[in-house]
Length: 401
Image (tube, rainbow, N blue to C red; front, side, top):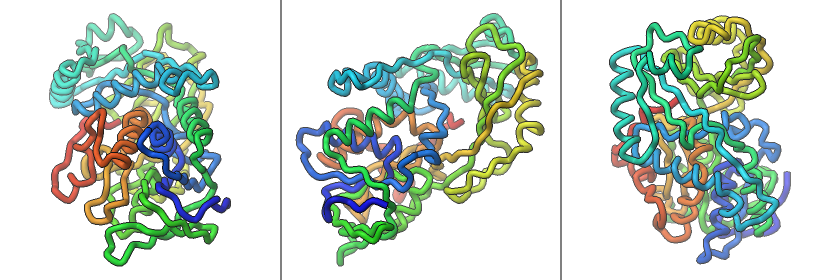
């Protein structure tokens, strides 16, 4: 454990993975803020973080306009990262490999959901295209489509990007501008006498630091962090599984990130390899340090579904498998942002429910704006503020993978 250099900070960020680092970087971009920032991270290797287990993909195909706008900003930011970070030659140039997401519907209800989402996406300027089974077969002849009624795909700013490079650039950039990252863990918080502010955070090392504001960016541990301030947060770790496999007969073109009606998704990984992921059956909350792999899923569920949907995957070799977590907002599967309604200096950057990494540019920028100015100054994210929860105003996102 590392002791912080100071005993008081203007902002303490709990969690240094993609969201915490994004917020830290964007805080340094705020010309009206020159305060001291501390980022507390329990695992500086980030090996067990959701960031490390991501599929590193971005999509425009959401069912709500705000989520589409968030991804549109992310795509612009990612593909102009070096310019966005001041032209530093050490910042990598990142591109999106646009193989798209292919949603497949095998029931009238699923097809209608795709049509409704298509209208929202097109109105927001996304290049989504609805495809009949015959049209899918023409462009992607490797699919078995006997049960498919409709598909949806977008080949513009939708596919794979190097999320690790983005994370590394933000973290290094924030450090270079004076943000302090420490290997430590928040274990307790003390509120002021009126219960309206966190005034002190106790770390696992025994150090206590005073704080002006606290940002909860602790991913699947978000509810535990909130509980330290006496706050109930509806975010749970939900286990998600991933598999890397090699095909004996690779496809002759890129495989879109295909969302099968079964719940399995699979995408191009390059060099004749592919990545599949998903969950099956009940989806209970788990402990945030539970990474136990269910090795039976590959043989019993995943491989049969793959071979059924893409017959060329009848002969494959499993190369790697692992379990990770979604930080699932159990109310409406959308981000929880902004300050708490009672503990007014406790801010949220939580509950992204599997699409957090692609939302990090907009969310990090928004968190910085909200904490410094008390409002969002670019993209208005107020619909996702915590305040909607006690008011009973959920925003349903249907396109959760």
